[in-house]
Image: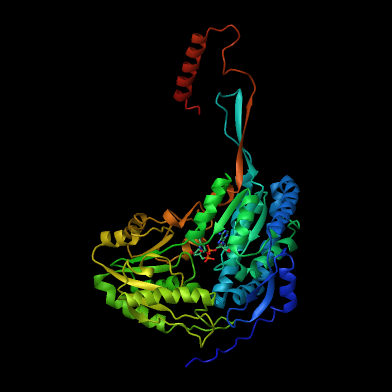
Length: 523
Ligand code: NAD
């Protein structure tokens, strides 16, 4: 029997007028796209769709605004973000309302997402003055020469963002680009354009010059080529398959790109792990954001001796999760983003079952809760001939595996094309960290599933293998949006023979100079 879902009361802030005003900034001579409320399937607003001509005009306006923005002293640019930080924190509830209506995630996760841009702002407000200041490096010959490293903005940065964290990826990745003196043209996913549009509005309220941050919308393959061709650098977050298309095009245009892609992230529970903590960590790691976190856990490796105890506690906790459509803080898990995505998740589970896997809990869609709800699902007996054994499911589906030795667990965890995130649990932190160091991933969390690495804004975070190229956060998360100009000054010409000097004598002098510089550690 299919029950009709209980209709949650939409947040009061999400009015037609507000939504119309948000989408009004999107240039759209290609008609509109019906953006829906995930919990109900109701159309919220028609999202304008941008044509290549619209995209070209957006870049022209961004380029014009960038010139005077880049000419401002860094401190003046940063002042905008000091004001924006307060605004973003003050309006977090409205941002969460928008994130929830467009993505269907639960409120707890939506409010956590609102914290990401302020965290990124705080970090780079501290670091940017030093990172962007000219650095005297010294020239090849002491005293008479100097060389200075000057950071020059790329120009206009194209950002292509996914739907799973639309506000965090759309806005947080733009912040260091803007601080460095660039303009930005953002293409969010059609499904989740509202929260990033509001983010741009808040930045402008804080004083960001109008025109500097443009938003264009459309299906990826329609608008992607025009956007990449007009960009000076591309920041992409999304699937590995799309990342390869973006990287190829950026390469052809000889522009840089950062690709933050998918994962098939493992968690290893070591024999000495605190099982209660590991089970809680696995619940968040597997089912947080309804399993739609690039760094979320899809494979759990357990020692034979603790397999049954972990399984019993994990299944009991997963089955008891409060899964519902609601705009309050009650539910522990929300909806998948769309019915299309639900079909993908269901197909992974059905394929696994057809090939011999066992469902320990969940495994079904829940149309009684909303059009795209899926149960927290735990599988056992997943093998590499199954879809979910090798490719990213990106839903609330996780598989349990046994291991006999730690070496075997490491080998199994590394047996994947991906390398985004991993998690290791153990009471002996040194031993757990040693295991972590053997994992082929860009991020690895000890005694946490994913949040600690992502929230550490001072350290670069990116994927290796098929999970990406480059990183966000850390110094390179800002410096990647700049080119380096090496400005060298020679006060006196000493790097060629003096007039009439025999070349052999000049060479002798040069070699002596090299020896002295090494001896006195000059350069
Ligand atoms: P996706 O690759 O389908 O789409 C991502 C974005 O790219 C969307 O805006 C989409 O419209 C656009 N796009 C699609 N095809 C394009 C094309 N040919 N040219 C230009 N743009 C194009 O990914 P998705 O399904 O929206 O997002 C989920 C994926 O993102 C998962 O694989 C997840 O792991 C990954 N992800 C990675 C990170 C990370 O930091 N590594 C973070 C979030 C999500």
